[in-house]
Amino acid sequence: MISSNLIILIHGKWSHPNTPLLRILEKTLKEKNYIIEKPNMPWSRTRQYDQTYEDALQDLSKKIEQYKKNGIKKIILIGHSVGANAAIAYQTYIGDADAIVAITPGHVPYLMCKRDKRHEYTVKKAEDNIKRNKNKKPIEFIDLNCGNRKKFIVSADIFYSYFNPTGLGHMPETVKKFKKSIPLLYIEGSTDFIHTGPEHVFLKAPQHALNTYVLTSGNHMTTPEVSSKIIVEWLNFLSN
Image 1 (tube, rainbow, N blue to C red):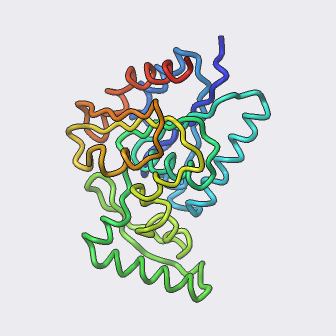
Image 2 (image 1 turned 90 degrees about the vertical axis):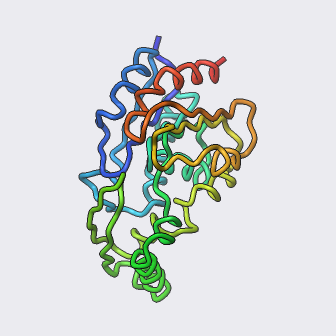
């Protein structure tokens, strides 16, 4: 029997919808008859930041609205790395998800500014361009992903939407502003160099009886696979 619940599986930075990092998790979910949607997000290897964060979340909302018209009852966002950041941002910016699974949440704009003065200057330059109505002024920047560096050139408004240190990507604040309280499964890997513990983001989310924090044995790349069974068990509990 096909589930009436839809899972939006949101890939990480410079990745793609069919990433092998989420393959085992997707297989495990399909075995439980969940409907899976795998959008190609603006931070993918093919799109390379071609849309603002806000517009990306609006597009996700349109997909969800169409599924609901077709009879889907619950929407569950499962995101990995910056995909987890996006799931959290979605619930603040749009707010119609029914549950979130955040796997090794990543993309930390304020830390990028704090650690790199050149990046901080680039953020300020983008902000100044936006204030002067030069939203489409090109911005060249170096993005970081698990120790790797990559150069991008995008418009000021697109860059600022993702890298504003107090914007939608700033999870410690965004998670406080969910439009409604929903169950949150927050998973970190004990060997992931960016894991911060429950206090940094998870405990700031609106209270819900099903909120759960899990520290697995995985790293940033292996945690989706390591935690697949945990996620399915939590989702089963959610549907009871």
